[in-house]
Image (tube, rainbow, N blue to C red; front, side, top):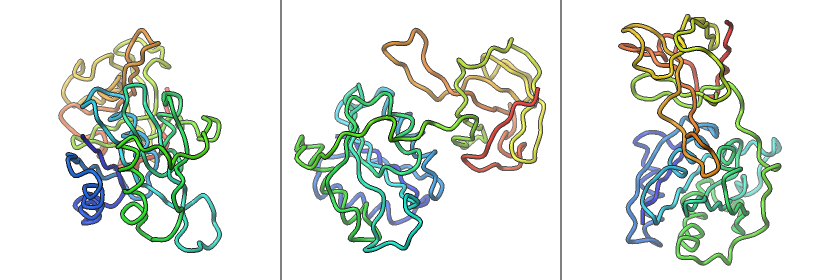
Length: 263
């Protein structure tokens, strides 16, 4: 069994160790991998749920995610209550358990074969992903579905926002929420991209390395997935500065920041 934990605890935060320990208490034979997203970034969380969940991997897989900004209700919280726990089953059998907050389920909502609430407490702890949710995740991974609640419809979940920064990788490449198939540019076309207050020339490319050193490319990136009902794999556009960092070129933008194509 392989478990990916996606959460906004922070890189190297002991919270990952605490959650891992609780999950292993119920799933002692599991292998775990942790992935940290920026604080309160439900967009990055949702992006990686889909990227990991919809692509090939071990057969017996769980994605356990927690990014819960508690923004569903602006009023004062009682008993640390937050957004509710959900369960999704992807077409390849991957199980997804985590909080329905913001965009966490947006990338998978139209792919999931099952999408349901999980009947566990929405409160009871400031650290619900350690104290409340692991037992439910363990039960679901052992095919005990007695905690599953009402079905969720895709209309209840927001769409993936257009033209945003979805992720910045270790090389400074900017992964976006712009689907590659929505563009009709000729290769080598010159374009102008704006992120925040920074504007830069770029070249549209059908492959990132088909540009000269020092050139900012706007190209289908490495992120995306195949779909049984599609002829071509789905790909997200990426900004790539060969020999440098697109992220630094644009002034180190944050995840969820808007991207505009000016020309």
